[in-house]
Image (cartoon, rainbow, N blue to C red):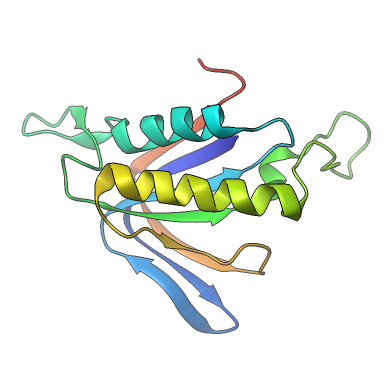
Length: 150
């Protein structure tokens, strides 16, 4: 699983001119699921996302998590995070999981994060064309890959 985590002042997801998700403070998580991903990846990544200390403390240092700041999370599926551009200029998405595999993993990831933060997590709609608006706070953007745990 790959995730781009952005610390946001606000973000929203719109589909066909209708706002389906909106938060004022927290994290926007763009989530890509690979065909190799499994339950261990879900747990590992959910721990990282909810525990990631990228919010400022009283001293202005990034030392607080979304849990510590009572922030919210929006999770949006994004298969293009598994794009390969090895050959030519047209991306290949062969590593991205097919919807029948990706949707259950996506839903399980959302549920796992909800348990960890004790709140309902807002989402985009899997497979839909979405418009995402955000004000990135910092900017702070972190890339995490469960197959490359650095």
